[in-house]
Length: 516
Image 1 (cartoon, rainbow, N blue to C red):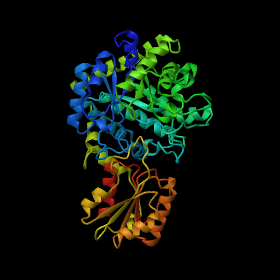
Image 2: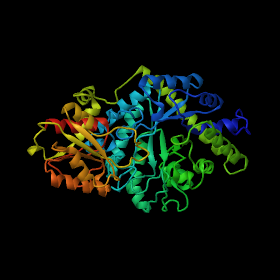
Image 3: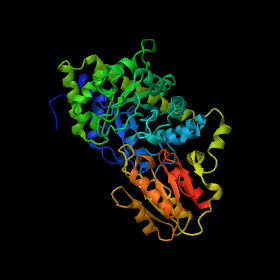
Image 4: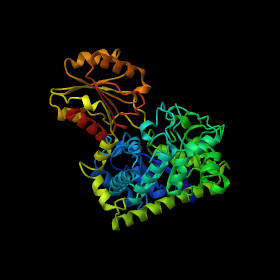
């Protein structure tokens, strides 16, 4: 453990203030409480930290006992990316489903309800929503996390989401600036590159971010992507041209004029840590204009916090990072913490429900809750006019790709659990790309039972496409449920596109399959 620097001077407290670290366990470890007392201003939560709403509330109360204005951040997009409900799947559909419905009032209401759940548990900063325009359907990391491929549609739903979340007293953090939608590489593993010119970036990728800033988003998250049109040498998180020259600069100087917090995507992601190193990457990010360093999704513990604290202090003392820049970053973190503390108090006094029209809200929450209602509205069903609901047990085959790190592989998905409940005797099986002839295996396992093939991003996985083609050819009554981006043409006797894999999306699909 590094002990060369005192943790009580102003410089060191500022260095601690700009870190947003994670930790392991469902209660606050002693080291975390100690660092909060010494200047740490933010904490990041992940699925590993949450067992229940009650436990989460006790955890955040532990943190506030030491630092009442602590920023408690989480990556809770809803849909496929959930930490609150990592063990069960989300009660809310994600961005693609909401964008497909294209009802900003619904998006605002969903975001408000999700924000209300976060606020009630003591969380006051959400690293969401994704404002990325999914212009590349083969994108391996964004996909259903985007509202869609139309910049104006993405902008209006990003604004609605920001408004709904912040009306619940939770700061929104739009990501991944300046736009991760046109990549074919996951920045968790390497540095993606987008070779779009500035005209394309301004007319496509930057549109939702500009709208969100105009709507008052409190925070923007940077992306670890290389955009030669802006900076040919450094990815966005480390680029002064991207963070200071574009995101922070006033509109009349060609920037977007964001005056709130700028937080990095996970600094331990390979796009930064494998290229620049954790400490060097953090210093460069602060120097470029970032205000907070997100770390702890993959790394956690006091050693990591102290390594980064000391790296920032040393960089100031060596002249690589100015003391003024570090102080400015720390002040922005504290300003957001003060806003969140005030919003928490205001929320306790008044709750508008995120909608101006209470009658509209009542309509939206009918029939099983707003999340399920939204999931039902997001379905696109092909073949229903000729479809007959099952007369006996089904076989549900989940054709499962490798989960990207943002989604994680611990969260259940698909309609299998609901179909087992609705259609007694239904059995399930899970298949992956290494399972040989998947189509043949499914047919053998299914026997005489009708097959429900559940897929995610069929168009991106040749093994999956081949399996579905074989199933449909051998068993024309096969039902296909697409829970990713529905890019491939509909197949099967019944085809259900859910626009996401949240638990409520699986239930909505199961209702159609089981009841016709």
